[in-house]
Length: 221
Image: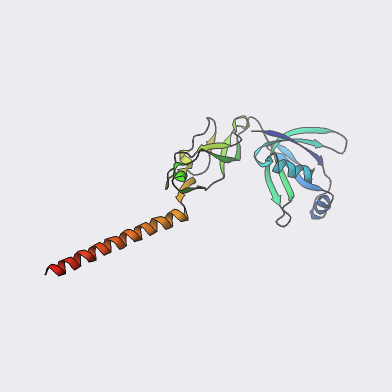
């Protein structure tokens, strides 16, 4: 997985009041923690965090945190964004959890799904539906992929791909249930209407033919 750098500073003072003050000053309150690691309260520049999230897709990447203390010291820690809270009104981050990574410890992450190819069913008038946008996987940090690519070119109308159909590199385990659908090709509304119209026309034709045969039979009598 890709690694991106982000600077943070140790913060003093906890609670809602201090967090609100930090946000007004252009920072997001955060916490850094991990396996056998004491939690450290930090703050991160709001603009820098948003840039990481939007441009660098930081939620699916390793984050090399530079943690600066008030005494002028600085340490670097490899982490992932474990939890991110977003303000529902202004859509800005209000709190973030960074979890330290151990390169020798299995990690569980959500990896985005990328489709490749143009489904046969779409060329025949169907529509490709992406039913799942990420897979939950586990593995050692060095083995984790940035994304999972799935070839959908062989899908016809009515076909689907489930988790059990996905091939993934050795050492990585998919944790989602096998029977969960990831993608499918379905008829579009236009093709459905056309098909229904064709069936109705065929039914009317058959009915007219039957009526005609009945009239001919009566005439012969």
